Length: 151
Image: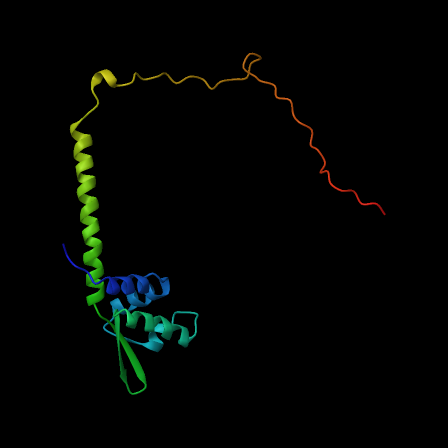
């Protein structure tokens, strides 16, 4: 069994749990690197808010930042995502194997002919007749009883 560093997986999944951070990662996946201001451009949030998201991604090891002059460029780092994918693939194989076994079981064991239910004819919807209508007596709505105020 493959050993995973739980703290790395926890930080990776926690960082990717936020939709803004996932979008930032997706934008970085399309380019070699982007500056912080380029990353922040499509979002209606402040630059400090974007920086906080980038801090979380950086702490999880998902991005690397490099400062050149006054410009900070961000790029993806793959190692934590590779571990997360390995972890997810393990469970994907588990579910695929189990579902394949279930499908094989269902396909190899058809219903015996003696247990097939006969087709039932479609009947007309039931209509109200005096014999199948039940009369229900309605209760009167009661007014709330409570202490009365005297003036």
